[in-house]
Length: 59
Length: 464
Image (cartoon, rainbow over all chains, first blue to last red; front, top):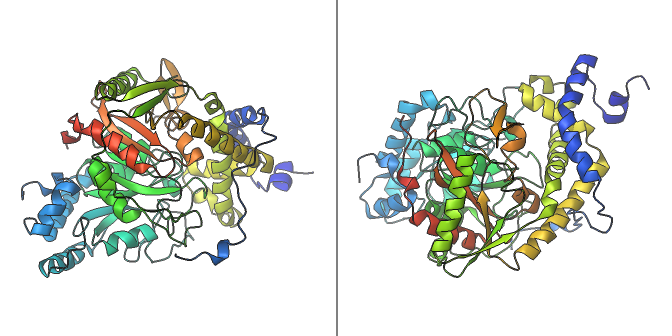
């Protein structure tokens, strides 16, 4: 892969700009890593698919 | 009643307008005059409506003809610039080329118009509501400081008397943070309580619409108009709308007030801590029972809200990324939109799992308490251009510090209000946050009103 950030993440940036973005992501990634450490195997995400959504109208 | 009309609250103005003692035209002229007088320094409005006086005249004619619509009739309100409007341009705080927004009224704006309110202009937002600084708006209490954000224009405008009330939006604290920093009331109601139709999306499952006002009673009056079902917002719920003003009389005596000692009290400025502790003591003295509690899961919240907000915002701006427009965004927003591409699908869904777990923790907490109170923000308004602040003796980025106490209620969707609870040693406002059960805005408002009644913070004005 010539540019994994472009091919894997769709992030098409010049090398200098990419380094700035990665540096800014550092602190945020540390927080996301903490989240990854939680075992939430049995918890349903707060996302509910609602196939009736297109039929909603005012009561 | 005619002198300094712009200083009057909505609850004071409404009966005066109804009885003919105050003219909506005179009131609108007073607010427009105030904008002319001070907004060159504040920069809180990006657009002042050329239709405001005509709309005020129409309101006055209707009222004189006996067609009074209710407490908002003839009241000048500011509209955050991320709500689309039929008679004013929308920019969402961006000067990037190639972006256009429809000329129609967002649902909340339509409700305000139907209630007879007079949209007086569009208040500035941090670009795409993705930040807490809202440049170039200044804080009315100290022009060298930020009003916070992203509804910083609304916070500054309401605090300085440029409009009686304003609309804001709140994805991680964007109504409550500027309310705290500018010394106003700001309510983020339950997710699904107020329609977001026509509010330019930032993060679909975190965005909330709501009011900023000068008093709790004014927030109740605004909510009476804003709350209600709207099929156009997929998250909106068909829950009954209570009488919010009537709820204000509910006594605080006998209520159980939770104080979450971890997370919300771990790192904050001394003056903020002192003011909030005093507020809790005041509520106890008023007859409430204070219940100390902990929610250890809050430790993982920052990663969760970042994962959801970054990936959602980037998904919304994907067309701009593909079109090469993002380099024209402001540097901080550009970085956040580009970072969003790095958040993975599993990280996003893990964050949504975390939300479910946190919601369950709060459900258990609300078996034992009626509301949870604490500071709205750990810091007061910081200097413009400053990106790091001292919190409890340590340097911390404003991006991390400012929303630490507000975002848990975006993750959980619970109603939360910020009300003024004092000033720091620099004369800057401090916010007290009160959160409640889903769709129990009435208890939140009643506690807020009980606290507000016992203090005179709302009667203090910034010297401009």
